[in-house]
Length: 189
Length: 110
Image (cartoon, rainbow over all chains, first blue to last red; front, side, top):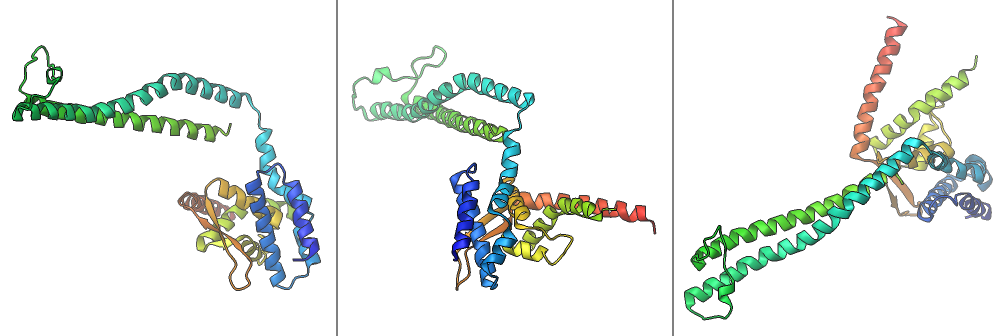
């Protein structure tokens, strides 16, 4: 590529400074691509430059949208930002720790409960005489002495419910976080 | 009588529509879009109009882009293609375009 063309791109890049690096290099790459297309059509470098206009003006045309977005201060926007952070701050104070504790604990209990009941049932059926089995039992409205097989079935159901509740809490936590980040990006704060 | 002012206003309003129509027909790259528009004097626009416009359409999610490496001596090209959101937007534009044509035809008489 001719020197005047690379110089053009360098100058343009300088004027694109307010734009993030990745986007800036993409813009330059696209203009470079067009220069190469024009060269392929045997258009001399001077004419290519003439066609594109001054590097400063071409760079400015990309900045147009950016500037008007940045200078867009309004009370409505300020209120929206305050409302957003107050809401997220207060709700996050409760929602995030609650769900973050509930989710793993419920899932762990959901797994542990049927396993423990199964051990007790095995102990009962095969007379294994395992220690501490008297500590595992289902308490249902005052009836404490249930058959270990019945206890196992109840434990399985309870385990499924606990596991399901834990998963639900986890999904709720994820969707809460996603909603917050989406709301933030739509406010473009 | 300054018809040029009116023409540039017309162009400003319809350029987006034309670009989306072109991209819908087939994925296209910037220079291709510019040189196709050059065929129609009323729609001809320079790089400093088209590229920022494409970038805005991209940011709004109406189109998507992907770089394609140059094969057989061709330069690398950034192809733009339609998204579902863009197709919805375009179909809404069609409705308004028809409304406009209808109004103009009816007001003209005959």
